[in-house]
Image (cartoon, rainbow, N blue to C red):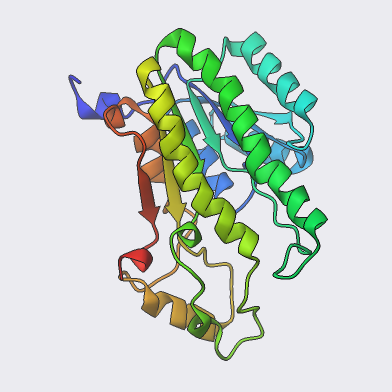
Length: 262
């Protein structure tokens, strides 16, 4: 590495972000584009993605929206073929898309769990394998899985005191995000020999105007005294996507203001 600032550049790189119009996805897309990557964003919500892509192109960045239905294996294959045809393949994959089935509560029907797991687990495995095969031919690549600090800890009921928010979230989200951390370690162990790095980012709670008692309790639970905002993930995403982190793989990196460090 001759210059660390040069190493942080993503110029000439191709990135795919599943999702891209949501709370975390929006800043992930902006970060990759600002660092110089040609950035594809993909989900079923193509209209929302097109709006994001148009906004980024208006800022001078190369962001392209494509359709993707993670329930449908043929849709994943079509996305892969389209990106390979346009660019030759991805250097960076960010597994960001997630579904939350409102019926998948504690004691809910098995079908509700199965529906969510199809997207949050089965599709994650398949898509990661598919795009990592392209990275193998290049001898390098960075895969970033967007987890959650809820994959590390349990529920803190005190955070919900004095609100009408549900203090017993679905166990499925905690199960999936905890599993994503170890999937990242597993994938890192089998892909490292091909120069492909796999890491997991575990964000903390994002401020979206939640009730004041929740915001106060949650913020006090962190070490920085606040919830996450619309730019907090940008630095870690560029770092992990770039050659500046070339010797980091199999890591779970909390970006939670110190919530899980207490």
